Image (cartoon, rainbow, N blue to C red; front, top):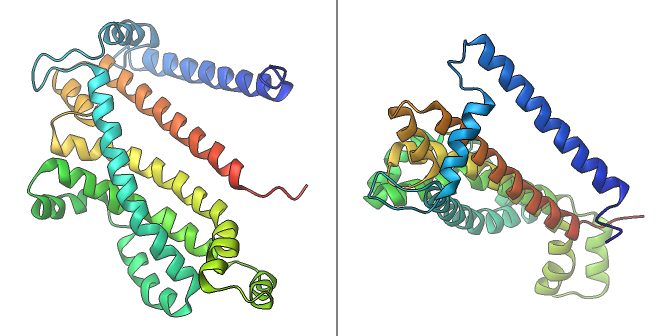
Length: 262
C-alpha cells in the first residue's frame, strides 16, 4: 500500500491531472475562438455521458453502442498486431543475426515501410474479398515495421564479449539463441512492439472509415455524417485514452524485461 501512495506515484497522478486541465483549457479556448462551432468540453461531456449510459445497445447495422464499436476495433487491432508481430520478429532476428539477411532484406523494408495504409487497402480488398480482412491486413502491414527494425537493432548490437562467452562454453545454436540472443534483444523487441501497437491503433480509424461496419473509426465517420461533433470529440477522447492504456501496458512489460545495472 505504501508503494501505491509513494511520492513518485502521487507526482505522476498530479502531472497527469495537470495535463488534463491543460487540455481542457486549450479546448475551451478553441471553442470560444470558433464561436462554439467546435463544441466545448461541457457540451461534449453531456453527449459522452449519454453514450455511456447504454454502451452495448444494438439496434441494427448502423446503430450500435460505443462499447460494441470499441470492442470491434480492439479485436481488429489485436488480430492485425499479432499477425504483424509474427512476421516482424522472425524477420528482425534474421536481419540482426545475419549480414546477408540485413543486406538482402533491409532495402525491401525501406521501400515498403513509408507506404501509407490507405495505399494498401485496395490490395487488401483484392486479396481478401472483404473489408474486414482488408482492415486487418493494413494494420498488420503498417504496424510490423517498428518491431522489425527494433528487433534487428537489438540482435545486431549484441556485444562481441557475449558471443565469445557462448563460444567458450560451447553453446549450441539453440542455447545461444535462448540464453544470449533473446534475453539481450528482448527489451528492444518490446520497444518495437510498443511502437507497433501505437501505429496499429492509429491505422484502425482510417481503415474503418474506408471499410464501414462496426468500429470506432466507422463511428467517427457516421457521427460526421450525422453532424454530431460532440460524438466525434467523444470518440477522439476514447481513442486517445485507449491508446494511452495500451502504451502503459507495453511500457510496464518493457520495464519488466529491461536489465537494471544498478
